[in-house]
Image (cartoon, rainbow, N blue to C red; front, side, top):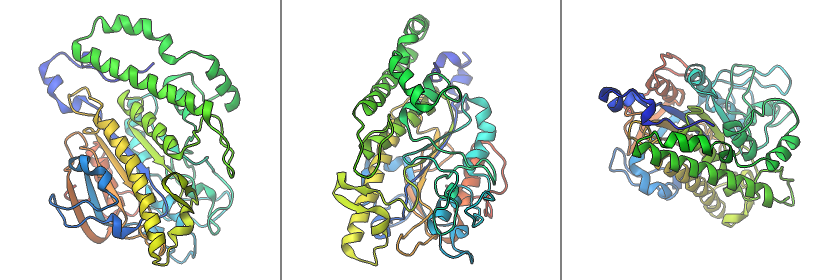
Length: 429
């Protein structure tokens, strides 16, 4: 079982202990689909004295831990003469900055995504180069949005122009990948799930070794290890409960291990992302909560309508209010994730959030018009002391979102001069 970085693992010299570079920097990307009610999203004012918008109010206690970035565009998500298909292009372009070749066949063509550029280097230092998650089942082929392959619409992470990195939706399989047996081969998913239910908790197999280790650790490390094991145990129990109580909804058969509640599903995957960062199992992750064009309903928050359907609101105030409720729901879950990371102490005394760079956003702004300019984007975390926080920056448009990614890669220590349609680094972040 992978352990979190501990003080005992760092050189005993005081210089090493106080050096911020002793803690790893992490990078995560979270995607929320179908655009936003931009009137309720956009903050008032700029700089550090801005006022949070109604949609962003759930982040009020974390205002000093993130930036709101306005005026960033993804021009390659526009039709460019290819006609309809904005949802597929929104997903495809979000982390690549590239224009997807319009095809539903095997000749897909896009480009490498920012997370996989980071994984090529940072991934050499961890057990998993990267972690890809989604609440949707993975799809790599078939025809989806207006003649675009489903590979574009159901994947935001791309290893190269031909190969997407399919995300995992089942929390049990993610947990096993992080803490249990290798699930990359041997037996199908159903058999592996049956085996997991017969097994004891992963912690039952390591407690004797853990007790011996704790006897040799200092007080801070012992507390950190206790907190880590508690978080793993709690997450494991929630995965088990999700398997026990998951039920089929009227329109979708739930695979074993996926909660019946969408909120619980999102939070379980956020918990696993946080544990993956805390244990340094990976330093790069992506989480597509739903693909663009998803028509999921939100009955649990009083919105029985399909999300995609009401995103074409035609300025109808009732629909816009429902969209704002969905937008706020997603931000509430993101706040949960950030608080989880902020509560995890890193080896350098900072929090895991302090040493992370986390983008939250969408490849569409207004869902009715399918705008791909002035995108809704947040940048959370301190990047190990390299990022400013607590501000609203407006870049006034005509600035590629890819410029932000070039800057993030630079702060990760990677010299990348161009990604997708980038025109340079993004100043001031």
